[in-house]
Image 1: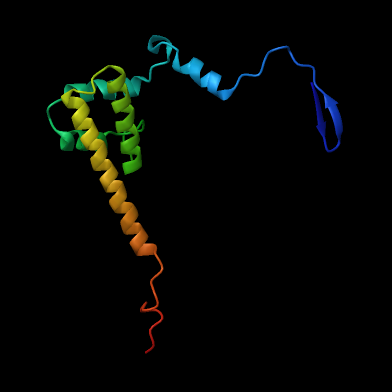
Image 2: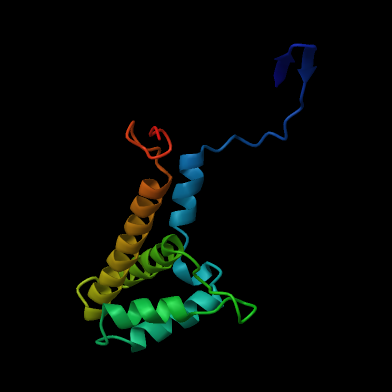
Amino acid sequence: MKIESAMGSVAFEGTGSAVQTLESRLLAASQTPPETRRPDPAFEHLYQQLLAMEGQGEKAIYAFLRAQRGADGQSPAYPSAKALMAVAMQVLVRLKDEKLEKSLIYKEVSAANTLAFSVDLFVTRFMGEVFQPMGDDAWEKSEW
């Protein structure tokens, strides 16, 4: 293969392997059986705990996720609403993979995800109002 640069041309001897597109690599990764993927023990433990909480309601699941602690045991494992939404979506995908999308736990985790989304939306809107520049009638611009 010959690559021309601004400095001149450089020849590279390839190993003969074909270039794979990103799509083909993603397709190959998605077709990997779940048994061969490396499991995340922390997520697996959380997932099993959430399955055991079926029937307790979305507020209990949301509170449970907020109460989770990180590896150090002090800091929250999911410090923001976006992090809570991410883990809830990961649980929902896993439930859907296991054909449990019609179960009560799926509905409860989905409602907890909606609750986290609402909190994120509220905080984002509030911060926008606080830091948004005011109009012409701002008290800083008013005459004394």
